[in-house]
Image 1 (cartoon, rainbow, N blue to C red):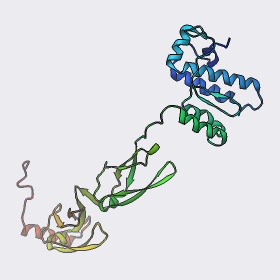
Image 2: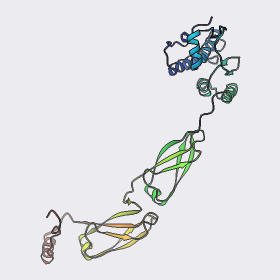
Image 3: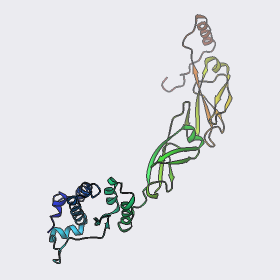
Image 4: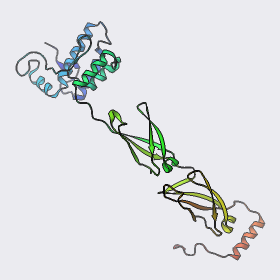
Length: 297
């Protein structure tokens, strides 16, 4: 009579399905004929392990084995078998699904030659192929690519995929790449947008902070500023412009958005005595309290 199947796999009778599969894979690799050429004892042990797993991994067979042992419910001898595959040399793989078989053969280069043929046959007779799986990947894209559109390259399982990025995509947007995921599933590409050195986004508008001097703010000035498409425009700063004021460049934002020039007045850190006298005189001529109408003043 064959040895007790639980003893063969080295697991207790209360072992879970995961424990049984783990023990089986370890022993199958250890005693596989390819790893032990010419070793009859290893060959025999390999067949024992295969036979034990054939019964214990199947819920209904395991229940019958636990109740009736090797005799079976009708008293017939021999273990409960299910069709599997036969490897070169007559080694049987009973009741294996393709994933288990691939895991075992993977350690012996089993994807090629006769074992590769076996794996193909096992896939045909085993469980139904796993359904396509959708996976998600995260890709950081430049600010200008998000604003103006373009493409980025993504490496998936050794394949280079070009991801088309439409103009105006926002942070967190997901793009679906049909059929580019595992087993023909979809690839969901989640976009994160890198910050720009000087532009910032507000919806479909972009904002550019432009420093001006005190004299430019008071007297007015013309300043050159960049735009999203790489061109430069000359913008007129009206006399008396305050820090924080915005000037609009219509249609220079994202899609139909605008570009705003946000003025930032820069005060010199040092000044001489004459400059101080002039500023004090200016203050006397133009008395003002900019905090006069604030709610906390």
